[in-house]
Image 1 (cartoon, rainbow, N blue to C red):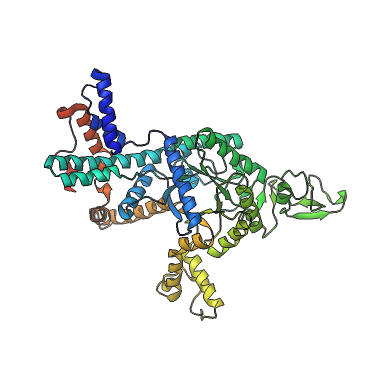
Image 2: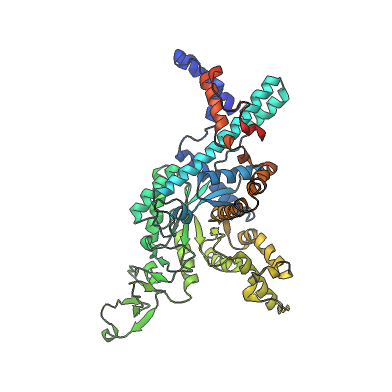
Length: 531
């Protein structure tokens, strides 16, 4: 018996038990409403999606071709439309997630207005967006399921048993739009207790995966900007444990923690690590400090700091800001140490922030990590901060030059130019961009590929095109040709925007509640009938 039919029987049983209290209640209508609202709490969502991620991680370990993907969201509607599009084009949501970007919350959701990615936005906006995203995904479920119920009623009314059975099968095998969200907690918005409290709110809203970075919370910068300051490992591990305790307290025992290291591009630290003996974690962190070895107190100026490192006295270089500097070209070694340490102390996945999308560079670090932790896996930011066209054309240029090919017709510094678009070099670069995710998952241990800010850019691009046409000579044709006609011909559900906003579901409910007396919006005068 299907879940729907079981619920019909259960409500019918309740109606008999409670008698007059269920007067006018149709058991099938109540069961339909249950089916349209499968998830009652954020914790139910967190557990359901954590199970999905753990299954996907195991499948990736068995076959690196089974990597996962997501796109960043800054509004519930954007996330909803992504999943509706995924189901429409691919028939399933498997291996497709959503990413909640702290950058986009700062830029688009703060009450202070647009902000840089420096953890200055309200921390409560993070769980609020998680809840909003899942509200819209649940509404997508209700909308699609409601359409199936209408088809079921139509088949019954026509006495078409075959059509009724086909629709019932779709209802019984319905795939939810609810998928995992990897949620950005930045550097924790404070100390480890602040991190724990925020993580709890995020999990309660439905997050099954929390990404945390090893920057100083009050000095946090975007991973692709300068001025990044990291913390000693002990500080970062305390926050990883705080997130794990939050998961455990709330009963999500298999929640996923993504430990992000910004060390590749971070040349500064605010603290000298505590160390108790040579070779411990604090000593390893301090060994990367840039400075001068000294022989006596005469080498120390007023306010200088001295630490014992490698059996010698080291005077670390301190900037006017009070920050300490790491040795040049130590980033890769620090990344490897960060990653191994995080995986050995509570993290499930890694995130290495890089300055360019280069499979070889990522693989070099991951291979070293896997010498210690063989199943190390990454979440990777396929960032819009990279100039993908220029980066890959330069990679192909360098490969051609190394192979002895004639590259004299190309200007390496100007390869972004449209004049190169049809060249052999550009075609090969585009092919490498196309296969980048599969290549990097196979060769560099990347389990999950995401684009942090895609809808920030698509919204700007589409708005620019519409404004140019509508306010220009095209006038209303700018909208009709550039938007509505494409929506109709491509089957974009939002062309029926009243339906997307819940009008038809509201009509169904009015009929449930008021019967023939219901005043419904979807009559003959509804202009949505034109679509």
